[in-house]
Image (cartoon, rainbow, N blue to C red; front, side):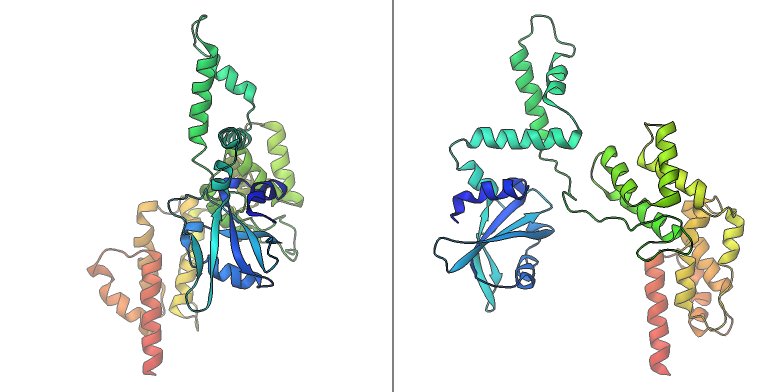
Amino acid sequence: MELRHAVEWCKQEDIQPFNAIVLGKVPIGISDVVIAKVLETLKVFGRTRQRGRRRDTSGKSEFILVESNIVLDSHNTPPEVGIEGEIGPWDVHLVSSLVASSPSSDDDVFYTKLRTLLEQEGKSIEDVVACARVNQPPKADLNAELVNAIGKLVDKCGQVSADGVSYRKLRLFSEARPVPPGEEDYEVWMEQATQMVSEWQCNEAVKKQRLVESLRGPAADIVRFLKASNPSATATDYLAALDTAFDTTESGTDLMARFRHQEKGEKLSAFLYRLYKLHQALSKGGIAAEDLNRVRIHQLVKGALTSDMVAFKFRLTHKLRDPPSFSQLLREVREEEEWIRDRE
């Protein structure tokens, strides 16, 4: 293969040229693990995955097609990659630069960006025309307005979803009992889903699709019923419906009782892990968000066993400073446990 065919290669693999690089002068037969190791040395490539291999015209080395989850910038992309004294160097070719150097570069770049944006937004070119007509005088130059409208949309294309084609998928959840292999129970799944919905950088329709893909059985039925009764429901509404159906009916006060005491034989760090679940009591109105750190350290020193030497330090010092965050408190507890263990 010749390097100029990289754009066509991307089309065949359904990759956007602006998210692709081709590594050149790669020895034939080198393992995927080694290639991944080299790519990880540079953070400017984002999260990457290999999409294909083809031999160059010399037949002595290979081209490696790599897809990134971000739009790659020629100003930040090095000309070569490798690990000094071990691997490489290999040539780095931005496919978007190859698009720009082709005879019909302007049309291809414009069309690719426009198509990407319209697909992400679920729109068509007719929607762009309608947008250009809004609030325009009868004699306005529609062609000029259309060009301006499309220009604004293309500018918006630079704001490509950071999680791109590859994203962290949710584990399956059905609320079947016992929990089937490969699925999560409700509490673990809901905690992950709530976090992912806030982090996914995509429109509402895609968020809902990703949630539905992870649901099975009774859980899928709940969302299906909600969608039928309220087609405009959001991903957050889906989570709220699942929460109503499957979450505990205990009040915030009842939940607080779960975390009241350290159990005999339980390490203080393990007790603190259980206190991490105080966010459940927060969602049920048991505590206020601004009081979470204070309540956690208070529960730790009051609920710990009187014989626990690690807790003894925190009983003496916790009133002398502001309540620490969970991660800070956990680190201090583990350091104290390790210090006592070494002394013993």
